[in-house]
Image (spheres, rainbow, N blue to C red):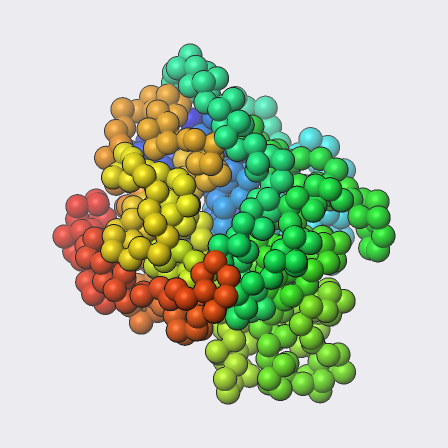
Length: 614
């Protein structure tokens, strides 16, 4: 199987059983890899009764056919499980080098079930698999774990690990990889799933080569596109994702003061990618097979970990721990990012719960009695840092916030849910649906809860195009008609990014759907056309939706908070717009072939080859 190893590793941590399973090529072509193949496995092996933190939940690490090849930005893998934060479909997608390491070690993916009676880690090396004792690693952060595991295995190994947050079953815990470079499987609380299984880390290393079908054509296409990608994405190379923060504030996309404020120009300048480049940036970080290098490496002059080169904050982190909380101290946010990476906590959700706590405190719903005497005021960077520590260790008020904004708000009661900005229990990422109407549909229908990357539709409202599926030009961001259809098509495309394993930022480098299809065919030897390619993405999105429907999800859950639907920002680049979600959602359902209650129709599932899951 060109592009694939052809083997999936299955591990039962309860019994210690280790097995290899063959990957069928028909299944691979139908579900591709990454989260697509993960969806098939999760649907078949868990259901609505499965406890997310119980031994029967499966934790799936999955690469794609392009992982480990020369295809630009293909150094990625997906992690899938039932989410402990939302109770529904959970997935995380991450770059770095771990996915490449897994394929070189001899496997396309790993399926992990059960719970070890004691802390363990996995060592996977050229087809050899060991379950090793991790008692000495328990309680250590992800950076310490990475260092110690490499010393015990191979200095060239790549390690995915959880920190104290995952061990403490924090519902917003992440899985970290690539050591100090800190790439994160951030969303859905999958670090807690790993912790619930007493699995501290997975180290991979090997020398296997990934065979491709048409080497010369693949080399030619890569040689043609790579320089152009770097040229078009130069801004992202120079300033990272944070390079767009000032523009995001200008157009009204940046969330400020828990989504209540319209402008924050001075603050945005202070925490921007440009400011980072002028002050604390030391070098770029490149994920495997990447030519863009948007990763930031920074060094602080004072405070905790001064002088240590570490992963710098991305746009989402700066917006969530910065603008959302009114913290305009770049050094403090960089340190907060460091602690989140060490503890293994999603920076997006962490910023969301801290901003929620600040507003709840302002309204007297959280008091000094709840915080042990600490005041939780807007813009206080010391408080922001202290809350990160408390969340990771479930200490005091941190125990409540570790459950995420939805559960925290439900427990506090009163008007607290008004301040809890989430969809299906997942905290909003840092893009405002009032600035780009399609984001409202994307957040409401995203299978893992509020997510800008599962549709990435706002990109097609600010310059990106999809000519192969009817969008030769970018759409107006405040337009309403057609946004439901466009969002659905974008979601189908993003499912393919998450399955073949390419970075979505390659779109900013000029990569087209045609290029993606060619890459896939040159690697695998298939003859897939654009229609089959896009239908595969649609199949995966619908299967994930079916999983959620089985868990009770319907139109009642396809919504976003009233604050976003009814409260205007009043100033800034999106001062007066409110997204008409209901209208766009009905159009979306019609195009999807779902009922108006959001349930995929039988005829649609048969057309997609999903009749066995009806």
